[in-house]
Length: 396
Image 1 (cartoon, one colour):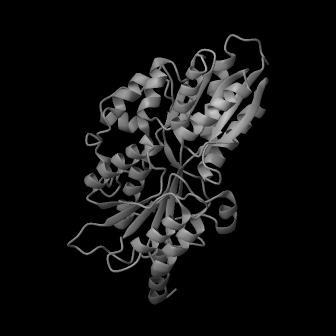
Image 2 (cartoon, helix red, strand yellow):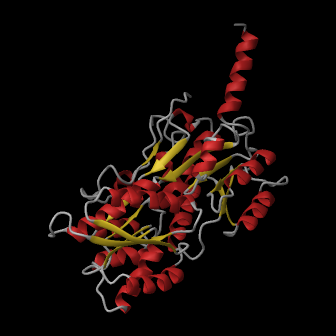
Image 3 (cartoon, helix red, strand yellow):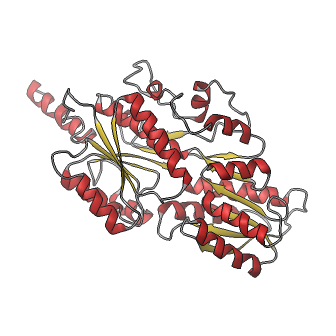
């Protein structure tokens, strides 16, 4: 192959690996600019953890980070996305989460405007994945994604609740369970519910009495849970797809004169402050979390890509396994989270550009505990609390 053709192949390969991001540098007089199109559910304390970690990572990495709320309705999301990605001031990269089935349209806008995007927290619906595939395929400007392993989280939550409900009871003893789901059509809700159903099918004696959508909202969950407690007096377990709805379930149980943590067992997902306190008090069995760090980890990956080290060498599609907190380890997690101040974490320590000797990204709770000089609780198992690339046959 001639020198000229080798050069052409190299240029084409770089364009395929990172469209625009490799070819278009940031002017030397300004840092890389990243906009987070925030369509997460407003009012959820978990969202504040996401933003706090992202802002801390951006400061450490020298990123001009812009938080752009875009609402939670499809029309609002798409309109604001088009505005952000249009014009001379458009960002170098956009971070986004996908809700209400608007994923394909968001990615189409990014292609039209030639703005590289990275997806966190919530991705394409299963049918859209079948149709469009993953990052750097049908949508070349879709650089990568980092999503919670939602099915695993829903399954682990259900199993922990069922274990607690059947402890000391005969094998196969019936356990009545209801589920508070998230928003209809959200991939996060669908995945967590799939994990719940898988756990119930595999658990002798488990009876899924009813599933209801409470749209991630505490007020909706409260009104529906009041009805469910009257409808199912034999109810023993309340599985909730997030902490806000789980906290509403606690209130409804107490209003009904029953005792959460004793005759009714409740669990949720998100590691929100009130839920962690409820676990500490024994009113909730567990809350799963750690996935609020996905935005910060995504900024590390984009920073390295922007400065010449493409994360494709490890993977484009990442999954976060969420760690369950119980009364055994809640104190350690509360010490780790502190007051939500992430300035004590050095996110540059996770960057391959800032640390050329790094060969693999260590996006783990254990590494963060070590930075804060806290002992990692042995019962917060290493299989949880990691963001890992999904195995792929694609080669860098």
